[in-house]
Length: 180
Image 1 (cartoon, rainbow, N blue to C red):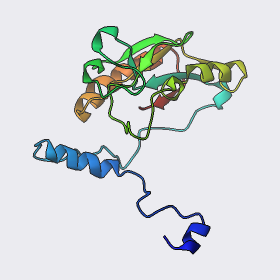
Image 2 (image 1 turned 90 degrees about the vertical axis):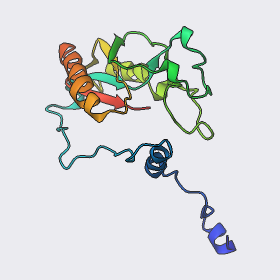
Image 3 (image 1 turned 45 degrees about the vertical axis):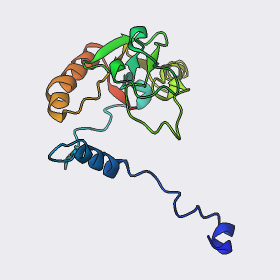
């Protein structure tokens, strides 16, 4: 790096974001799949603006974190990827307390990221504080765990309708999605 670039605060040329889409594409091919993983993307997004101000909304929290399962091996901060801890159906839990949720079942960059702060995948405490401060009307009674399947069809046909039903049953006006 030239001195003028260093003086301007430039990062080294190799200090770039990880191209996870290309990496996933290559990974699927290396596993022997005939076609690489195809990322879901839509010309029209099935979301809509809020019908009322956020401070009048009852919010549901949706996370891809898994409930801790003590019989499924290491799931702590820094644990290697643990597919035994993966879940395959939408689940729900109470928002009044902080559940023991973990993220060892998903792939993430363990060399540059830690799993030490559960508030990043389960911000229930912050959402309860937002409700107490009047920034949101309330949290729904339940939060929801949403599985990370490799089948877009199963996600669309099975998991999404189940999640929507649960959010509606809880009277949610909106949902906060927290993918891991």
